[in-house]
Amino acid sequence: MRSFIFKGAAARERREELGLRAEEVAEAAGISRGHLLALERGQYEPSAPTYMRICEALKAQPEDLRERRATSAETPAADARSGTDEAA
Image (cartoon, rainbow, N blue to C red; front, side):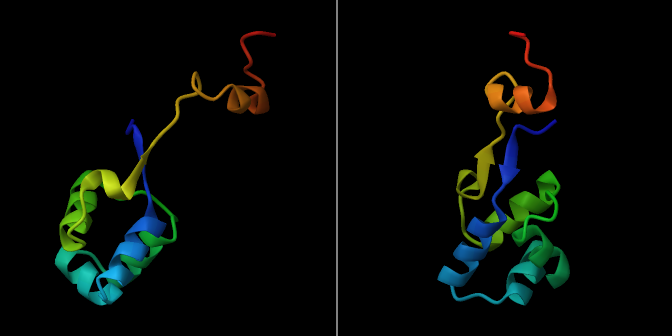
């Protein structure tokens, strides 16, 4: 399991900062425009190769477009919501 989450909004912001159209970034990354837009909206996570190609197309460092995924040990509130609080 991956330990990061793709930040689609950050990718969209970077694309707009560079003045690039979705079509241009998608073509450079080897994916469809619809695929790129779905990733930007956070509908799903890109594969590792696609993620790296998007970073290259946006001239971005990989860490600029991801956030660390918290584990359940790091988020006690998530455990409480799921009913798996070990302290109980």
